[in-house]
Length: 229
Length: 344
Image (cartoon, rainbow over all chains, first blue to last red; front, side, top):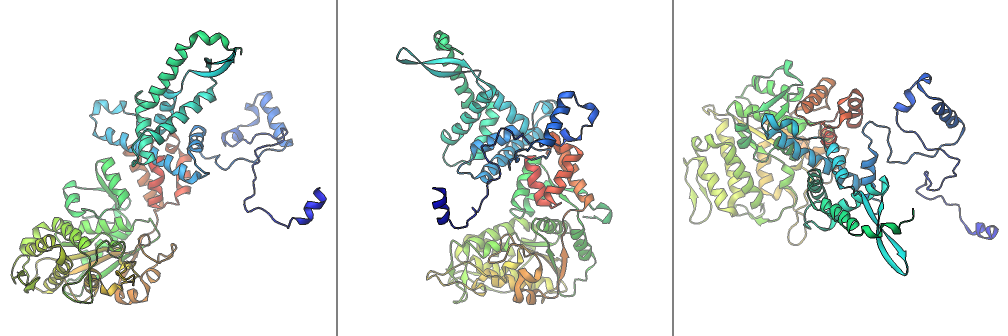
């Protein structure tokens, strides 16, 4: 079949070449982007790390994705959040919104800082990154619910969640909350900054959602034995 | 106001009593937000502004007015240098005629009336009234001192007599929206005549941002969709008369601007390219002042200012490596640096 089809194909290269395939041979190793990992001299490494380095000289390495940088300002959690906010692959817009959100948070906090009396100045957190991380931490649920089938019926069973899953829930709730439950005409960055600041103070709709999830899990405690893992 | 070469790179605070009257909307948008956040207005003293200020101090005001033109790459600080110079003039007690952005008069016009004064021209009442209001706020003390020399007739029943104070003329323009563009023309004519006389006790500073709008093209269309030529707009016509060198007793300080300009390529920043042939010929004997990106000393000073105001929050941005990254990413361009530091 290949012999017949290749005669019809004209020589054509796609305009956008995919460099980072999503399915690599397991032989390939992950790329190491941070600069500090390469500046450590031989003596500081433990035997496993020496072995790892040796392996890296021999084996092929996957291409680093576009969004990962070796700059000091790289932040994996933030990149994940931007990816989740992205629609139709418009990373530029998603990144812009995120940057405007951070700037907005910083502006509000710095304004409060400059207007506050001297005693309260140290308590005001001005770093937007700290606020973002803390807000996400506050939104992460501890237990989640899984739909398990037993005897023809499906029960909502409380299960422990992995770290990745919890982070996913926090980000998803944050984004859906901002997209749907706010006034139509406010900008996304405005809505996001309000929600993040509220989550930092442990108030707001996302925290409420987390508490509801916990209450549901508590209510369905009896079915916990349906979990077999 | 008594800045000299030694102060290059240092920030100086504009007293808030001066900011409200001087710049009702003369400052750039992002700078206004920065002012609100930091609770103070700070401009860096830079070489181009210092040059113009020293020229203004030494100029002979019985000669025709000198024209200064700030030009440079996008975001290199032309508008803020203009604001610095305008503040200097204000502190010296001059009358300030500040047009925040001439491009706003040439595009997105919501109301276009045929002019009452001359049948071939068009009026823009909205922009004229906003400008008159700002002029009134800026030049309060002069409104009662200067008297008009001629009689202006607005309609069959309304006229401003010769010898009435300028304030009355301005109020006439603000209240009667239909004749506001003509009032603007009258105000400019009066001020031009009066400052040229040797007995005048005031000096006039004409500050126009985005001067290349006056000689470019416009997007305004008549009701039958034919384009309007720039000469047919009253505001543009009167401003062009002001830019001509035939009056004395003041200075004309202008800026080029590519960001608002119509039908110009993005990479154009030199006067020749942005003004076009006719513009260049009209402005011809002028003093060009180039506004470069930050030098190393200025960059340091800006960085320290942001640190002092608690604006750089990312822990990495406070290290040496973070600073090198900032230099690389922004190429020492003031506006890019400001945008980067906004979220870092």
